[in-house]
Length: 126
Image (tube, rainbow, N blue to C red):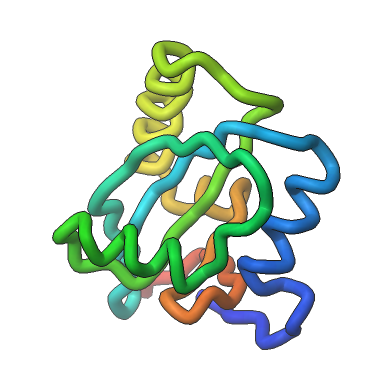
């Protein structure tokens, strides 16, 4: 895995830019536990983003209340606000894809527990 320290890649900046680009939207969310060299999905949900006032510290508080041991989160924005039933279907499909290949997390916006961008890299085994 790699982490970007660039300020523009932080969660708060991403959320403001995403909201600016499309207004209110639904986002699929997968919490993961990052080990060496593994990434394990631990929880998933979807959220409706209405406005851009939410900050990373708010998300961390929400994630911590889930009771899951997590240190990474991947966000997958959908176009506009999506009805709950459709969001659940999209989420189940995404969960299956992530179970099959963790690199799918790179298709979203993947952040570590500090709100820094991350990417999954393939590990070569000998």
